[in-house]
Image (cartoon, rainbow, N blue to C red; front, side, top):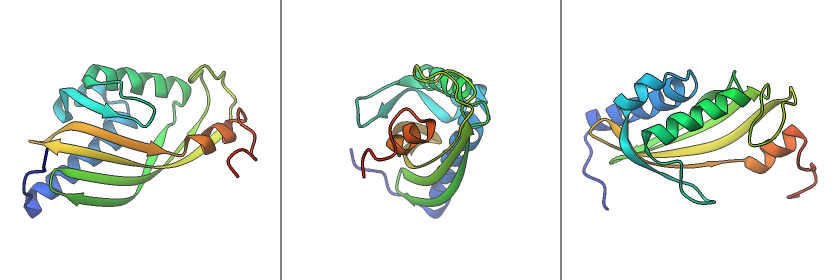
Length: 150
């Protein structure tokens, strides 16, 4: 589906929504804002398969992430916006203090680089694509050898 035309004001609004989703809903775990900024049936696109879909799936994922990394925070280092789409480049940092994806807490700090692309319509995210350095993430936790992928 093609994006609708954008105006400078709508691009600014879309960027503001994308930033709030990352910095407030995800990083600060302000789950009550999710219903304001994300459609109930939003679609999550992932390289290894879709999901979790919908605002409730997003909220569950945020809770899981924060159990593993209670100090999980993004530093947004770049933004590109066109039409309904906003792409944020960021560095994610946190300390592995709880179980995450079956990995028991290591106490290690991680630094993960990645991109989030959001399609935002009428002030709400309707689709998301994300790509982060998961190999580097698992190497930093010590569950994948450092020489893998080199």
